Image (tube, rainbow, N blue to C red):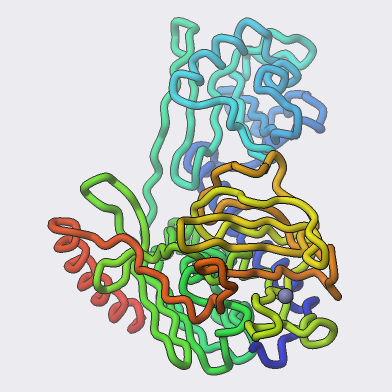
Length: 435
Ligand SMILES: [Zn+2]
């Protein structure tokens, strides 16, 4: 059990702090990336700002400066609409979009994304829509910029520019005194990586009952730095270890050469994936404190025959394994209920849901880790929680005592490559620890 969990408010505050840190570093990243093209934000305008060209800042300069506009994608925006409303005529916008489409799937322009348009200064007329676009660009990812520019012929050319950053290995170790989240926060673990960490171990660990004071987690990941040494991006976790009182679990990320499949594997080369997950709910959202006060967080007993995960209403519930929906609907004290048949031996059941995933029906196939519904308090329940049952050969069984077959194992060349990969990871951990 978690002991002396801090008030949920503290956790929320921490989340906010972390998110703002992440946001800040992203902003720095964007700025620094842009600065290689554009030395300043002098001409920064947004869709909301008046689309007037900026007055000459340096009158002594003979060459007029390009007019640069920054546009933020809002809900319902199309690129055509954005370009036209910012002074690009339809014909030009259509040509630009056609060129862009040759290298970028346009449907995926995310809301909030920042786009940059440069107009040739001498062609810019704030009152007309005949402004000559010089170039158009945005970041596709932290190190990839989509860049469309006008050729002398008047047509557009699009390309993806790759920016390279310095990288460093980061090793983080946290001792769990109150909760995994606190431990991660104390060690300044990025929230995205904490989520990944929990997801990796959700197959092996019951995050509601198995984490105790004194347990530790460690991770290794690569960080990308800009020229000021500021972090601009963290890669995925490359190695993770969880040391519980009676369990040591360790995985390294590896992509098979045979079929280019990426997963986490233990030192024997066995996949992290098991038939069923022990924590089939977003483990970062578990609220033990609530449970202590109002709802007994029950483990498996003769009477209870399932385990409870206390989490806020609306927390996503995942299918514990691949399978077929066998039951979906209200079921007495269980409230909104789903049961999945995984194979001839195993079934899992989920109760007290607030709602089901849209479109989910009896007979539908589900994938392990796929969302099937959301935590609620329907049926006989004193507060929002997931009641989870593992049914083995028709008998409700303690999920913690179920011995699940290990995941797929690496073979032949892949196993050899992976084992030497693990040796290099070990070296990197020693080096990163020393820093
Ligand atoms: Zn229960």
